[in-house]
Length: 147
Image (tube, rainbow, N blue to C red; front, side, top):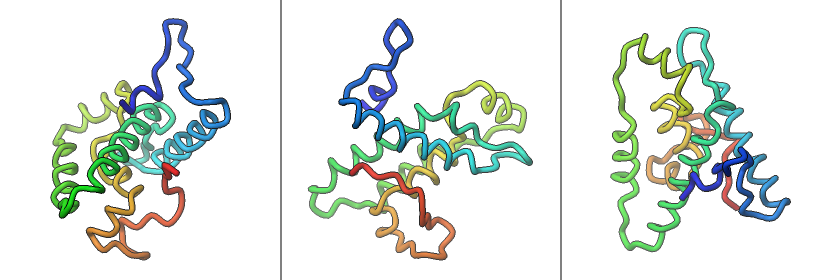
């Protein structure tokens, strides 16, 4: 579902599912996430290509937001187990050469950022792992909001 926000028609134009104001706001938020991803050094002096990956960053963020919205009414939902499985889903071990090839050709950000930088956006993650200001995973600014 979340890829729908970045779908293009055969002419290469993005399908606009929202009114112009909402579409502009969505684009602003996704660009902010892309900027955040671009701040990460992924290998030596190589930065993540946030702008190149922004459709996938948006899809990952929306996908997790949708799941968290669905489970919020499930009594005793185990957020800790959920986030641990989410992280395991993106575990990947690869050689330097493979990593650098994917960095240049894949529109997805590195797997560890698909975990760490995405979960940082959600209050449920902070709550279940008791993350406070000053902790390594705490993100004070640029948190993505669905509101």
